[in-house]
Amino acid sequence: MSFEALWYRLEKALNRSDRSRGGRPPYDCVLMFKIPVLQALYNLSDDQAEFQIRDRLSFMRFLDMGLSDKAPDARTIWLFRELLTEAGAIAKLFAVFEAWLKETGYLAISGQIVDASLIPAPRQRYTAAEKAAIKGRQDGGGDLAR
Image (cartoon, rainbow, N blue to C red; front, top):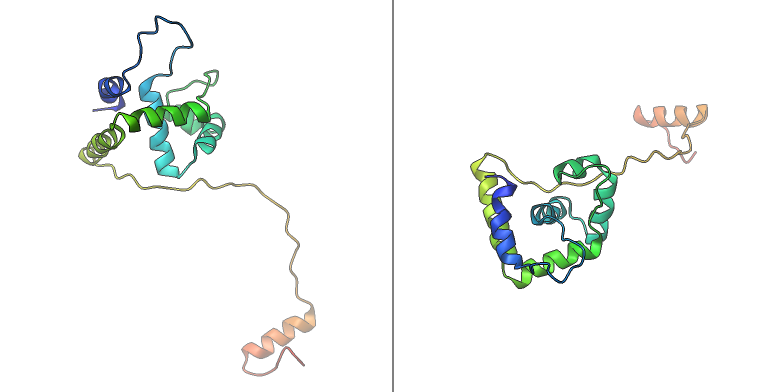
């Protein structure tokens, strides 16, 4: 099974209109289901998910999106989750997904996204007297207060 195997279940749960009244076409339901998966793994809010999808190539790759594809906004993510919740399908879909992960030998463990920003920090240097005092204390004698 893959995510695409969930397509029928997702379409059935969403019960989307036939689009005869027009409007913007909806995002693919499998792509939209992958977003709550990412949110669960990385503990992301809807706004954070929107930002990370636009920012991280790994997220775009997981969602099968290209660099020029438009990412769903936070409101679209929220509405999708609400539709699945109202249909009573989100727990069932996650259960099917989790069972598939276990069958294939994967274990879903939540993670953290780490910000790797580098910031300057003041250098911490001891004076010669402070070094001697520290060394004296380690040898069993001396006191820094003197």
